[in-house]
Amino acid sequence: MAAGQSLVSMQPASPVEDTYAKLAANAMLPVTDVDISEAPVPTIAPAIGSDQLAPDAFALPVLDARSEVDVQNLTKAVDIGAQLAKRASLLKSALADGAPQAVLSGGTAYVQPTMGRLTSGFGGRWGTMHYGIDVANGIGTPIFAVTDAVVEKSGPASGFGMWVVLRHTDGTQSVYGHINRSLVRVGQKVKAGEEIAEMGNRGFSTGPHLHFEIWQADGTKINPLPWLAAHGIRLNGSADDGPAHD
Image (cartoon, rainbow, N blue to C red; front, side, top):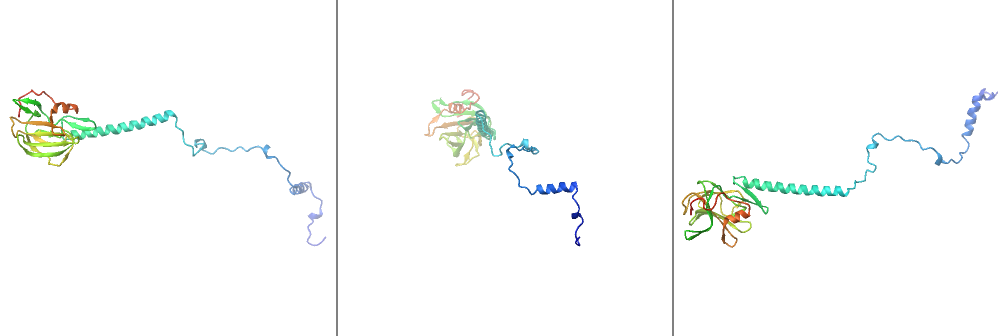
């Protein structure tokens, strides 16, 4: 035996060694074609929470006809809500200075110009023409702008003692005569319901009252009562509830 050789190589192979030898030999053989279509598909367990995921992350829900109608109704409801809020805000502003009543007519606020009793109406009286209405109350009673306007006149006036004249956004004018004190200046913009003067007894007057007139855009003087009523404002009393004051 040559030096350095192992004795194992010289002995016959045991059954276990023979089995290992066959496995080693088989490992060297070429692999034949295999049809994988018949191979069983392994079962893969779903991921935790996968049942809560959308089947397609990029898919958007399609609204049916009823859903589209609901959206339209919701949009209308929002618009109506905004309109109601605007109306409420206008009325609240018109009443802020103490006007006894306010209404919206054509989207514009109108108020009752003062508190008191209607004592004299529009028309002929004692052989002359009375171009306004008279509302009686105490000196200092607040007088309000009947609607949004710009102050055209403020101060002394023949016959009225003192007055305020407002030009409204539609071109008509309102006149407030026999006032005790004016609270506005010419050129000033005023809002419906804003206090503009105090009731007085100046000029040709027999008692504290407001003489109120409405002039059309061309200057024609018209009956204030139908004009006020057309805008939703009605005064207490009638034109002959008391003595005329001017």
